[in-house]
Amino acid sequence: MKVLVPVKRVIDYNVKVRVKADGSGVDLANVKMSMNPFDEIAVEEAIRLKEAGKAEEIIAVSIGVKQSQETLRTALAMGADRAILVVAADDVHTDIEPLAVAKILAAIVKEEEPGLVLCGKQAIDNDMNATGQMLSALLGWSQAMYANNVDIDGDSAVVTREVDGGLQTIKVKMPAIISTDLRLNEPRYASLPNIMKAKKKPLDEKTAADYGVDVTPRLEIVKTSEPEERAAGIKVGSVNELVAKLKEVGAV
Image: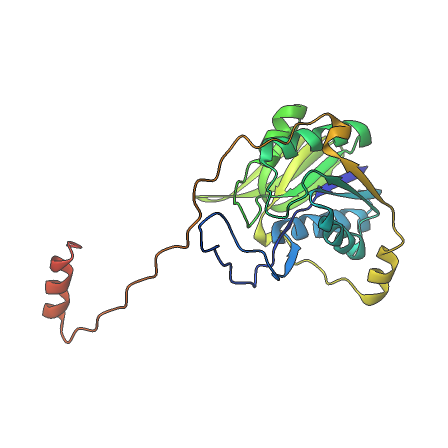
């Protein structure tokens, strides 16, 4: 079974994001970029399936700017077998929308014929949380979102998923789309020998036009702004003073 893993290049989660002075977007100048953490978990899960003998080949896919090669090389260094880069934008500030990404992935799936697509539940830059679901709809495949545990059993996948009330276990028919949640696993670090080997692994470069997909944005970002700073707290000397303050702000 082939496993397809889409990965996205995003601002590193340790970096404090800065908004441009004119509010037109996020400042990416000299900012460290890395693989989306949820996608990293998806790559790790694919590798574990291969180590367990349930997958034969792992294909990492990234859709965006040419610099996404670095992200794919990270996936290859972790253990993916080959990679496909779909160059769909020239400007690093251009974010390809979920529907366009899903359409490109659907075309790649039809070409590669994997038995499973493992993707992160969402990207930490736009928090859309939509690509996996859209891909499932386009392909007509089963979907299991927010996976906390994945077990491939023959032609089915048993997935424990995180829901508001706790955990829910479902069984879906393969082929399937599974999106990963934070507690699914702990991604491994790529060793130096594997980083060197990754440079020799196949990385094919395509364009959105190769798959006949129009990536023209359907959404317009009107304004980007930082959240308001939290007001400083107030110390009170007694319970009566606390109640009075709460009444003052309309909390009680």
